[in-house]
Amino acid sequence: MITMDTMATLATVVGDTISTAVTPVSTVAVEEIKESVSAASSINGLDTVWVLLAAILVFWMQPGFAFVEAGFTRAKNTSNILMKNFVDFMVGSFLYWFIGFGIMFGAGKFAGMPNFFSLDFFEATNIPKEASLIFQTVFCATAATIVSGAMAERTKFSMYIIFSVVITGLIYPISGHWVWGGGWLSDLGFHDFAGSTVVHACGGVMAFVGAWILGPRMGKYDKKGKARAIPGHNLSFAALGVFILWMGWFGFNPGSQLAATGSVNAIAISHVFMTTNLAAALGGLAAMITSWLQFGKPSLPFTLNGILAGLVGITAGCDQVSLIGAAIIGVVCGVVMIYSVEFIDNILKIDDPVGASSVHGVCGFLGTVMVGLFSTTDGLFYGKGASFLGVQVLGSLAVIAWAGIASAIVFLVLKKIHGLRVNARIEEEGLDVYEHGSSAYN
Image 1: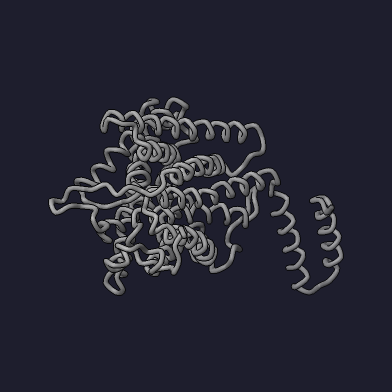
Image 2: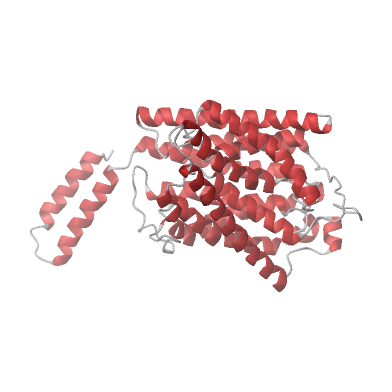
């Protein structure tokens, strides 16, 4: 086995040997070897394994989203939904490596400098560059997948691919740079530990805009504009999907610590595990009780979305809020989600089959703002004043505005050039056969 000590000794020997030469190239070679060894010596194996395992858990959220979306929609569109979830990750993996990672973490205040197919610009810290890339890739794919559910059952597959390209290659990396890449929001002190705004509010507002421009599904509203329920075909799928997402969130939030070595990181990770779980549990309970009081029965779909609402809401401040604060955030998001779904569905007349606009958009914003209230280090409720709260509001609104305007431009251009929506016959009979040539059920 080649240890770091062996590598250091080898570099010294090579350096001593080459230093006897007088050519400039030899001097450069020595410095490159020394820099390489120095960079490698800072990489921590345990931290790297932890981040990669967390990345696996976040990747595992992709089938969770697929099951939730498929379960909440009709059987005739299941293949289409599964294909879109695969496309999000395949396109996201390529585009984020090609250009997105550079835009998000390169030098600059509004956007980083693209470094096409190159990681040379990124300095490895306690984990290798490749570990940072894959961890950020799975986050990027999550933001793209959120849009899929709101636009389900009536979107042209080809147009969805184009939009997925724009999300993963441009829209998400730019706003992500503002917060996590050294951009202007990070300079203001904006705090979003794992992405309530960066990932979820960004994806949620794009989902809202997409559903609005696309228009409702056929039969969703009667002639008087009253909303009709279009039940999903398999709530067992949806429930399984939420369990998968709940599990995946233990990579999403604790993994964002990006380290596991030492007692400080161990305590931080454990705390984030607890705040994440409590918010999910209380979000689900709050949604279940609210739906019971509001509609006379404890609703399974609302309970499932309540769990997700709690998870989305806690993601920004899971490292800074207390366990009681996490529980309160979960309850607030679980309750608000129900009324947000009803408002978007019945008042705004925007058809979002899975409630993505409310779960991710509204609760992502709400959770980010509540960090300004419940942060034990800077929160208003802990006597730290309102300045941090103001930064949280400003930062989240800035990302929402960017994602909303940018996605609206893309959707309107695609609608004008080629059309976003399938024709009435395809929508009525199902996208599976017409768009993909096969059905999910035979």
